[in-house]
Amino acid sequence: MGFGRKVKRKQMLIARKQFMKSFKASMRNFKKQVKCTVCDRPPGPEEKIDNWHINKESENIDLICTICYNESESKKENDNEN
Image 1 (cartoon, rainbow, N blue to C red):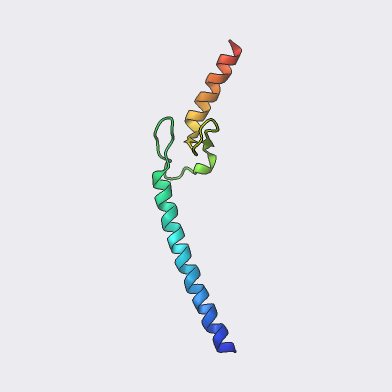
Image 2: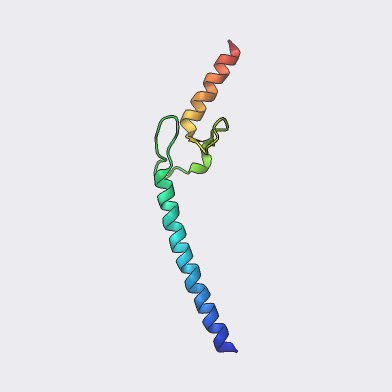
């Protein structure tokens, strides 16, 4: 019984390793495709897209970088003051 368990565990570890390898590769490819919908700028090497904003007015998942989002928010505030 111990041998069968050892074989199953080894197969599970191999499968997990393969999954993580393919997951990391697909995430690298995904990050290469990400860019701001306003300025068409990709994220910087140390920049996380977690801080980017999603355009709620669009039906797609459109990401807006923090620079463009801050500019649009300041324009909205200026328009509201006038």
